[in-house]
Structures are given as C-alpha cells and as structure tokens.
Image 1 (cartoon, rainbow, N blue to C red):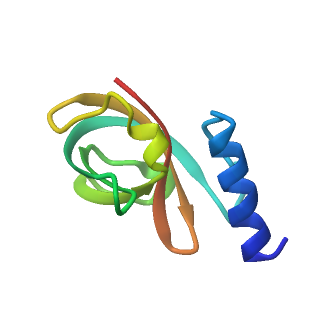
Image 2: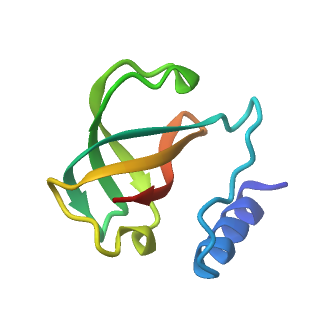
Length: 100
C-alpha cells in the first residue's frame, strides 16, 4: 500500500470514529501504557505524555511528544491521567487511542 493510500485509509478510519488504522506487526508495532498529559497542540496534531517504560516500543520512561489525530483529543487536557495505545510509524510515535 502506498504511503498516500495508507494516510487516506487512516484519515477515513479516524473520521469514522475508529481508534486505530494500524495492525500489530513488525512494521507498525503498538503497545498500551498509561501516563500524564503534559501538553496538547491540537492544531499540529501533537500530544506530550509523561509515561513509564514501554518495552514493546523500546521506549524508556520519559516525556515524549506523540503525533495524534486531533479528533482523539476531545475531553483530554494537560494534567489528565490517561491510558493510551501508541504505535511506531516510519520512525515516529503516534497515539492511536487514548482515554482518561
């Protein structure tokens, strides 16, 4: 699937209210964790989360800026304790599901 088609598929799925356009595989590993929201930039589609280690993504405990579909940010604000699912896509980390 071309990158343009993948992004279109992701946008369509996100628009339908589904939480994930990714499948758990070697190219797009994903994992769930919990943490605290430290910042949100809805216009840029970014969220900053302080979290513990996420072994399945090879991440130590840290504060990291993730890409996120702005539609997933409804009701989420800095200071919220959240659980989230993140995936690695082309070397970048993306939150694909989040809830308080």
